[in-house]
Length: 494
Image (cartoon, rainbow, N blue to C red; front, side, top):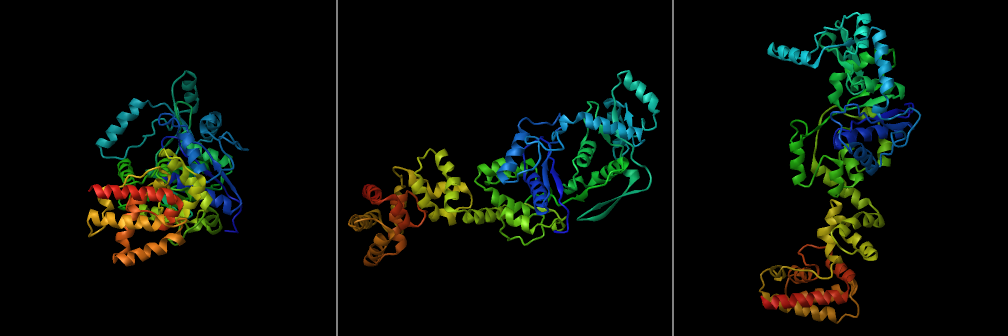
């Protein structure tokens, strides 16, 4: 990668919905290429489709990038030398360029009404043809077109696609792509509201913003012949085209749909960044996971963002579709949680305790983190493992206090003997409590699971917890004895 000049790349989402994993991965690859080459990462908001515009979507996109740590160098909220960075604020630029193509003979005004186009489409489908514009206005005299426009007639500007020969485009991952021109349509470049379609807006902005590489998923491959023809009609240099794979649903059959996303949410997963954050996934884990779905490095590689930058080579991206595997997400998320320093992990899980209505003692939290770190797959796993540390009282289920193969009365007797051992200790620490408790197990002729199981449920209120004696040390002798006494009383009533 050292042979590459500094790349200028753009993440150019449309604010028409929530930020999903596919968008996040495109942004990540853009970011990695920019940072690897000492280049520039740009955020551009392509908001000219006003019918599909969703209020708040731009803010969610920006927040998603910030959460992931993909900080851009130019964008709508921070400015830059090639702004504005919202396409809705660049209307005059597109109007000028659309008419430049008309003057060059590469585009033309079209006055066909939506009603005519709808009827044309119906007729073509009835004849089992692919719907396409029939070119009615393609050969219209430009002087007449100008007169009709001056008279207030509504129009769009269409690109005059060559009808003979072949368009050849080059994709970095796929090589040459050849398309017969007679199957390509005269696409609309400028809409009747004066705003551009993606085809014009993105090509103009990429040129004016000096974009060197365009990274976008393979869904855009059918538009590539149109886009290269537009660029060539202007006489501009093309960017390097890179079309990585798309994400497939976990079964590997087809793209993820809204229904698939809803089903994933029931299992504690999502394809939307905002949901993933709420579900306890961390940006380090998400980035590692999505990076490797389409990057030809070993799938088990645990990498930080800085490590990805050092290893990234755009030529190693793969064109093959990648099935979403949420088990891999769990793997990477847990791995990165284990990498977090104690203070950092404590800060990240603290809000989950607070949102559960618990009072959190920071000193105690720092002691708890090493006990639960290895058990966490997502941040919200801290609640089932550690919420009980911050409760004044726990509520064990009476039946869970009864040890395996023992009666309530036998379990109560074991609890009383444990109480005697622990109450006789000057202080309750791992070193002071574990040896005499293990001696008690030997003396009673029982298994550690039977004796410590009663103790665990009594002290924590649950059958699964962090290491028992370390947990008891944090809870403190007084509270451990209080909870053990209450458990004895519960067993005696059974």
